[in-house]
Amino acid sequence: MRLQATYTSSFGMNIAVPSNYNLLGESLPSEALGQLFQLLSAAQSDTHLMRVSGEVGRRSLVHLRQLARHLQDNDAKMNFNWKDFAGTQYHWAVDRISAEKIIFTIDNIKKTRSETKRFDGFLVGASLLRSRFEILLDSVGVLEGKFVNGLVGKVQETFGKQVTAIMDETEVLDGISGESRTFYTLKGIDLFDVNTI
Image (cartoon, rainbow, N blue to C red; front, side):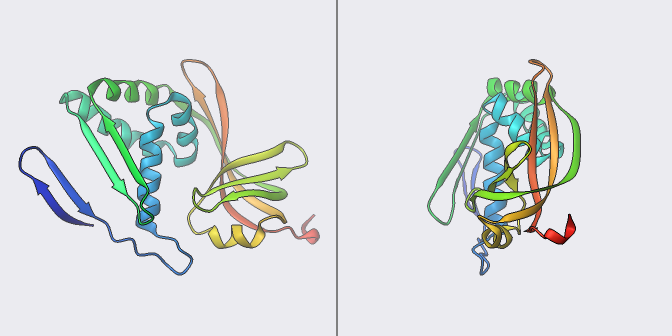
């Protein structure tokens, strides 16, 4: 990252982040900023924040809570914008009142269980742009979630085929409503091997 410009009328700056796309069209800086804006935009909704918390983990929520606490304590506002390589615009704005709501929501989200599991099924849906997947299982129907960086090639290779998937299964509880939801993060995927049954 490099500082590109600052503004004297108020605290503001432009930061340039090199994209560094690899041969598979992946860019760690772009994926990181995309994930950041997904977390920030999810902070506007209790249910979206619950879903994202199950995918990104508690540590990311702690950092978001610290930012919100700092903005609340200083009665500050923040506007954050980014335009990716494809020209997609991202925007997030927060003030003291919305910072209070973020803190309240995060304080009421509790992870109750997290474990790594193996599932056999068919990879029936995938979005390489959003790093999302859908796997059809005989026992429970379709599991959907997010896949980790570096799995794009494997997801393309196994799409529409019978697979063995390694996933983190995370259960999250909303302390206010008592609602419990389970979220999945795909960590590994291979073609199904009949010999491993």
